[in-house]
Length: 358
Ligand SMILES: NC(=O)c1ccc[n+]([C@@H]2O[C@H](COP(=O)([O-])OP(=O)(O)OC[C@H]3O[C@@H](n4cnc5c(N)ncnc54)[C@H](O)[C@@H]3O)[C@@H](O)[C@H]2O)c1
Image (cartoon, rainbow, N blue to C red; front, side, top):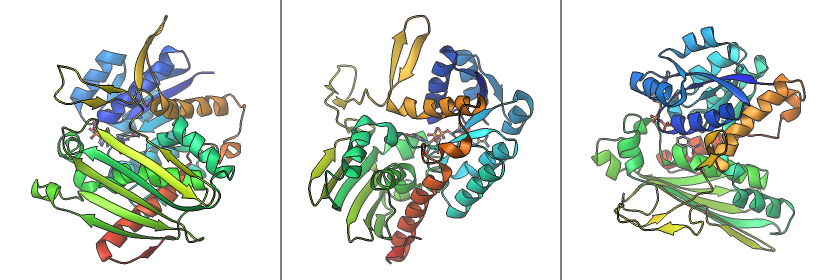
C-alpha cells in the first residue's frame, strides 16, 4: 500500500531527505507528492530535480495534497508550529532532530501527536549506524559490565554555522545541532537518562563574526549509579579539517571497554581537485546507481528516514497499530529526554551550576 508524502523545508538537509524519499518513490513504495519552502529557488530546484509540486505555504500544501505523512526539515527552532499543524490534520510526522529547542515546545508537539493519534518520529540516524547498534547490543547484554564512564565528541567545521546556516545559527548551538545526536544515542544505548549535568561553554570566535552562539559546549552527565559521561561539542573546526564532521564515542564498564570511531571508517582520500586530505564515511550516505530505478541514496542516514515511511505504510495497511510501535522507533517522548538534557546543558553553562535533569 502506497502512502502520500510531503516535505516542509528544502534546505541543506531537506535536500538530503528529499533524495531519500525520492528513492522510496522510485522504488514505488510511496507517492512523493509535494514540498513546501519559503524560498522559491529551493522549490524550483526540487521541481526540476524530482518533479515535486512546490508550495510557499505549508498549510496550503496540507489543504491540497491529502498527505498521509510529512517530514519537517526546517531550522532547529522552527519545528513546533508545523508539527502541531500537521498533527491536527492527522498527518504522521517525521521531524528532524532536535525535537525542539525548548522543553515546553517539545511537550506540546508530543501532546498534539498523541491527541490526534499520529506518529511523531524524530530522525536520530545514529541509532541506525551498525557501529552503534553493535555497541548497544554489547552494553545491553552486559558484556561491558556496569558502565562507569565514557567520552564522546562531535565537532563540525566552522563552515556549517558561519556559511551553511549563518541566518539561524544564533538560534541553535553545538549542543542543539550536534550534541543532541549523542545525547539521544546515550539514552538509547544505556536505556536510562542522566540525573544531572555540569557544563561549560565558550562564546568567542563566532561572536566576533556577529554570530551570537557558543563556539563549544562541554558537558559532564552524571548517572544514578555514580557513572559519568563527558560529551564535548563544537562547530569551529578549521575549514581545512579532513571532513565536515568529527565524532567518536567510547564507553568503559566494570567488565569491558568499547570504542566506535563514528567518523573515520578507514576511507581516506587526497585528490588534486581538493584543497585538503579527506576522510570519507560512505556508510552514512552514498548515492548508488541501481538497475531500472537509477540513482538511489543508501546508508544509515537514509535508512533512518525511509524506516519512518515503512512504519507508516504498515500502519496504513492495518498490519500494526501505532501504539504497538512505541519503543520501536525514536518517538517524540524518547526525543524529549535529549531535549531535556540539552536544555540542562545550556542552563548549566549559563549559570555555572550543576543542573538536575528531571
Ligand atoms: N539528521 C542530521 O544529520 C541533520 C543534518 C543537518 C541538519 N539537520 C536538521 O535539519 C533541519 C534543517 O537544517 P538545514 O541544514 O536543512 O537548514 P537550512 O537552513 O539549510 O534549511 C531550512 C529550510 O527551511 C525553510 N523554511 C524555514 N521556515 C519555513 C516555513 N515556515 N515553511 C517552509 N519552509 C521553511 C527555509 O527556507 C530553508 O530552505 C534542522 O533541524 C537541522 O538540525 C539534521
